[in-house]
Image (cartoon, rainbow, N blue to C red; front, top):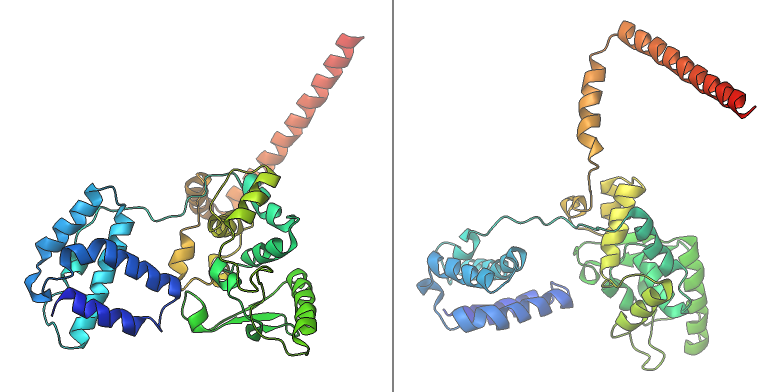
Length: 329
């Protein structure tokens, strides 16, 4: 079978199982990169060297190793689909391609104080509906999870929002407790919907564009206004997730496991990319090992020496003050 024939059936099977965003990224990667080179070739007529050369050309055109890997992983999916259907019985060559090693850690290069300013800017934004949507991002939700959030997945009495597998990127059942601040905001929206829908049970999307009565198509413009108002450098809205994760792990000291759950990551290794160790860590670790060798006698003697040292320091300061007082007289 030809790659294109397999792909067309593969994407139909995958469409109900993956998010719309993921499917769109698959279609774009296939149409742009895979179809022109391999689409009309028989899967049994393609060898490892073909895929290695394909990857090398992508890298040579300026594509990052991570991007090339994602394209190859789509091909891996197509191959595995073909094997399941007995259309192919050979090796999965795209999986064998060698790529340069790359660092997939998220580096938020701005200081903790500046990270805090970005997060505070969301909380203090003066455009209500956009601030409220952005506030959901501070709860760890992704933009799509906010834009297409429906009332049926919110329990205001319990203060919980639910995300079934087909509504979140991790493809698992997820539920999150909301802050009192957000619950109070949602109660206002709910009251408005009761008036509009004429009943106590409301349905539909939570956040709707008042001009279209449909979910917002994008939030880039209000996000840019927020940054301009706060005098902050422009970042993509998705970057707030990286800032939030970095701030929680490195500045506020939350456990990576807890931040991973909050952000809805499918694997804790994704969250570990936010951790930025301090240069002091290596020294502190070694010092802890050395300290563990000390006996009680050593520790007692060290405590006495520290006490004597403190006394000498205080004496020196007092003496210096007296000398200064004499000089001024």
